[in-house]
Image (tube, rainbow, N blue to C red):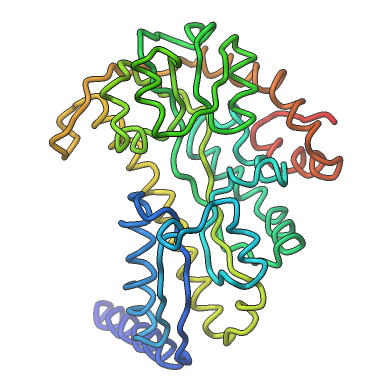
Length: 348
């Protein structure tokens, strides 16, 4: 009897879900996804918009999606194009906008985020403030924030811990990464990803920051010898929609999209963690790597002492520089949210 009752409840729930999907008005969406060459786009974002959304809506909601690079769009243009309504739904790498609005970097300040759990907690804490910023500055509605993955160090030469970075030239991606590396006695270098392998070989850099699979895809393992898995940053990405485009959607479609996009955000966080492990396996050449091309890099895990030192240096040296770039309300909001999660206080 209990089994029959449970089955009946499930059947009714399924019918209810089907009816809700069938009640949705026909809606066609235009989506600009992340960089098309990245696995997160190909394996998660693309199938979500092109298959999951139509399937879950019984064909009532469809989406046309392309990576922003496929459209010939440069990263720094994305938010401005969303503000103009040229882009409806879009994925925006936040690192392009750290200098424009320093509050964007609050969730990705180098040295303050030791793992994915803390990274997610920081994002959740600061999401209301980010939503306010995008509404005010870009007329965009925030839908979620996801990471490309922990940004670690590829080094050409032996490295056993944090102290070995002193005197080394390190390719960094963001200003806070540069600040914390220089505070550790390293020399920050700003070069493009495709210049890293030649720079390793020419000895013009000693280490370079990147996600493990990004470095693997760029074949950094051909020139780098050691993978120091110190989480320097997380390279967060925003998912948003032009506010006018959102307001024009039927409320039922809005609800449907918010429910499904929440699942997309969770999927991208999980995918990020898996990609990190895959990148470690493939750069170091373990059997867990499913690809023929495998590196032979030596994996170096940060000690608890390294992590503690990294956070202390970041708090003392990097955080005040970021606070100086941000406004008083920005710093106040940071301390109420991200700062509480990280256990740090920024001072203007």
